[in-house]
Image 1 (cartoon, rainbow, N blue to C red):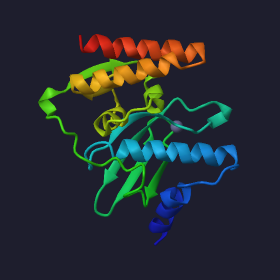
Image 2: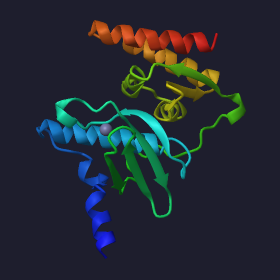
Image 3: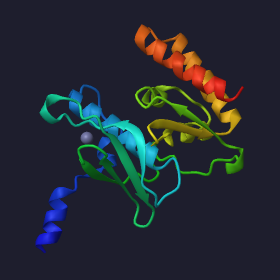
Length: 198
Ligand SMILES: [Zn+2]
């Protein structure tokens, strides 16, 4: 029993339904937590279940008031449905329940066969900008949230059509970005995506 109690104390379980359709005027930390949870659920549901992999979602912990340099690894289980996440640097972890069928549940088959896909390597620090880019195609959205850290790079894996569509969305975002630094980072992502399909 002590072991079970220890486990329950240690694991931070969040019911996603408490963070959906939040009213206006909530404190910053609550809004940031809701945004972080939405990213975790989208990443964890963007691909197959039963495998743990490292996303480009930055850890939100601030040990000693400095932002943790880690990224979150995610793992999804279907029966019973659960999503676990863990920081690859500080080990902060948690579990999310009641995400099934929510707006952030991206589960679904990508329509193109796996053999058609190509891999584009992006700088890890810039790849999270892709999460903010508007995409209308569900396959492209799944591709974005499947971006994984491998061998020191952020890898985008998709068909040339999907990568072209994403490159177009990134170019649109860069053209409408008022912040010059972010605009340059988006331009850099566009060039890498565009070069990969030429
Ligand atoms: Zn961390």
